Length: 139
Image (cartoon, rainbow, N blue to C red; front, side, top):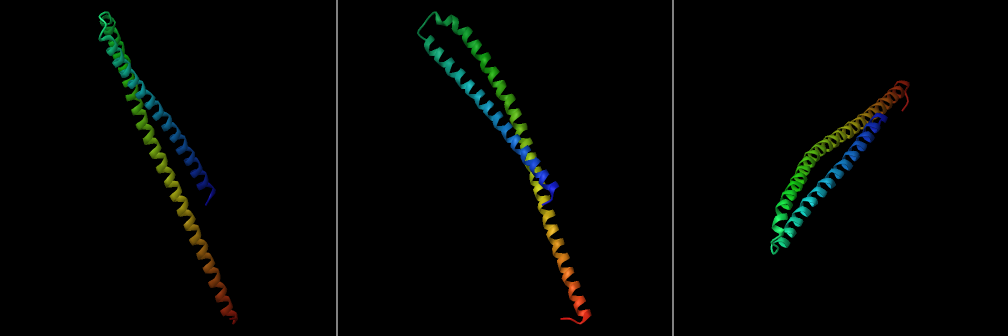
């Protein structure tokens, strides 16, 4: 394989690995945000259960529910933003992987073409040698 092809493939591999790491970080952030929403929901449920038997709890539950709803909406917005970022990262990774495969295909085609050329040159050299021997009267 030629040096330029090796360089392109190496650079493409590095790009694919970098994008895979970036995607993994984004997925981890999304999972963390989803856990945050689940935790907020569980806290709201727990507070509601604890406030059922307490008359005074009714006053602070209004504020708690409003605050909980705001925090939940913020977490859901964060998840939506992360999902958009994740889709972009997946597209970039797919494009980088596609480019890598193109470079590998071009390198393989160049290798096959070089092998064919070497074979043709060897055949031509042997044919010429045979013609020279025949012209000289050799075997």
